[in-house]
Amino acid sequence: MARTGLPDCGMRRTYHKVPVNLPCRSTRGFAVTYSPPPGAPRARIPGPQQPPPTYPQIRTGLWKHCLGGGLGLWVLTALVTYATKNTTLLPTLILLGSFLVPVTFVLWAYERHGRDLGVSVILGCFLTGGTLGVLGASVMEYYLLHPSLWMFVGVGLIEEAVKLGALMFVLRRQPRLHGMRAGLVLGATVGFGFAALESAGYAFNAAVSTKGIDLRALLETEILRGVLAPFGHGLWTAIGGGVLLTYRQLNGRFRFTGPVVGTYLGVSLLHALWDSTHGIAIWLVARLSRTGLDKQLFAQGYIPGRPTSRSISSRRSRWAGWSSWPCSASPGYGRWPAVTPLGEIPLGV
Image 1: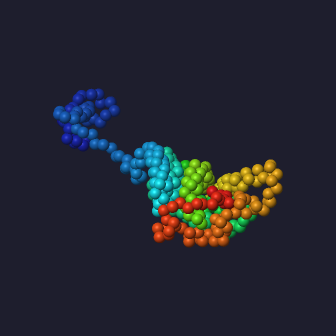
Image 2 (image 1 turned 90 degrees about the vertical axis):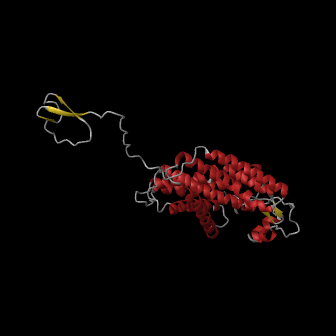
Image 3 (image 1 turned 90 degrees about the horizontal axis):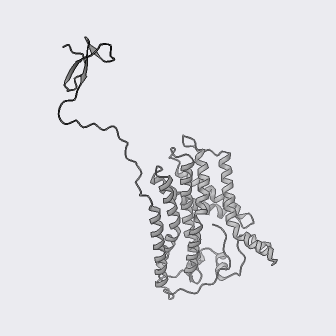
């Protein structure tokens, strides 16, 4: 029998006589078919597989364990600090209370919507973006803002600008990251990093007084800011970041289009309104009750109240309070001294 020129695959050939007009390769009226050899069937060679994901596989629901475990540690630290009167536990208490809610929400956003963004980008936005935002806002507010009725508008414009600028800086070498979803997740991450660091500063200022440590003021500040954290910096920067990355070009360049500028102005006004709500409430009460308070009391950005030694000393010098910080060598170490009530509380988030 003549060979057909078909490749020899090591299989037994069987010839069957079939009509020549069938759509098969034939020679002299015979078609060639193949039948498998006797014995165990050969294993199939698997096809190409997708590479494993580059991001770590974080189990679902980790944010719940973070929230529950962190809250338990914070309560335990507060109880131990109150029982032992040990001021060395204050940094632990401040950091736990300030970072608990922001870290929990970042984990939730990563699990639900940002697993493909990468852990390094999330950490960079939270730590680097948050730190740059706090530093930039502090410098610009120190040199550009002065006490006035429009002070909180300036605060909103500055802080929202530096947070979006920090987001752009972190993503400057990540041209693949664009779109609404990435902007919402990464913008919220920068905002929560900013909120965590700022809350730590507010908690420290609330605890330190000219006469010692006010543990109650520290705990109240952390609880209040922790509850309000999801509705503040994280939300505002998520909105701005979502629009910013939506209009980002494929080559990585950021475009400041009309929607981007409009969104920035909108979230800045929301920020300013949030900061001034306490003062607006006091002003409305004063107007409705006809107490006759002077308008100049509200022009400085502070709630009017009875001046105390703490408020007077903080006006003279922000750094004068370091001399009153209790240490292990001071004779009053180990006791919580009496603290005068706050006469003036600065507004703002």
